[in-house]
Amino acid sequence: MAMPTEAARLPRHIAVIMDGNGRWAERRGSIRSVGHRAGAKAVQTAIEFCLERGIGCLTLFAFSSENWRRPEEEVGTLMKLFLRMLESEIEELHRRGVRIGFIGQRSDFPAEIREKMDWAERLTAGNDTLRLNIAGSYGGRWDIVNACRRLLAANDGAPLRAEQVTEESLGGFMALADQPEPDLLIRTGGDCRISNFLLWQMAYTEFWFTPVLWPDIDRAVLQQALDDYAGRERRFGLISAQVRGESA
Ligand code: IPE
Ligand code: IPE
Ligand code: MG
Image (cartoon, rainbow, N blue to C red; front, side, top):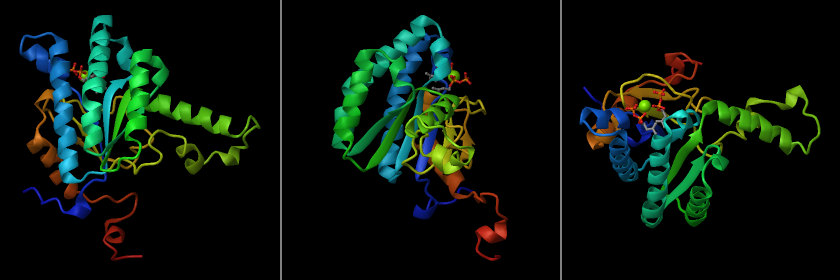
């Protein structure tokens, strides 16, 4: 029996691996790009759901560091779709008070896309209903290496002593360091793996996997994930009695 989702049991931050677009199309006898277009519509469903439920942060895995190795034609389709989404969706999201940010190796993208990303971030910087983070050319390993480089650079070129490298100092240079860590990870498409998503940030995230393919995602499936999350006990290394405040 699913538990009702009380405010306190609502995740502050949901991360999503939006997987299954290609299979969705192939099962319909269509080419993979049809699935990616359907997947883009599903993104709107997920954003709408988070806005309605008062979720603070939503991080969507749109394109991984490894996805560049897909066939050139598919990468091209995804870039076109990405650009089109940036052109058509940002203003409406801005009206809804969404603050948009992009994480990943931005220099990998064509200039036209980079400019739109910068513009969207500037335009929505003052918004506060939902923080929408789009991970593009993102990899968890990239993020950790990038944070190391930034930590070194921040020391003004002076050599860093080993004791200056701490979870706090390094973590401060990781993507999304200014937001709560994801409470809940949803992965669609049936595979139970992390695929190099937020490796550092998901140390204590609750994982929820569903066979539903991303273009088929709807409010009921998302609600199922929230209900499941609400029933879990997060212990963060403690014992249950401590979490319940019964034992010192
Ligand atoms: C996720 O769907 C979208 C991206 C990785 C860009 P896939 O394209 O991975 O779809 P499947 O997993 O092949 O079905
Ligand atoms: C993960 O999906 C990346 C995105 C959803 C953007 P993949 O389809 O690339 O993951 P693998 O290759 O099946 O692990
Ligand atoms: Mg996939």
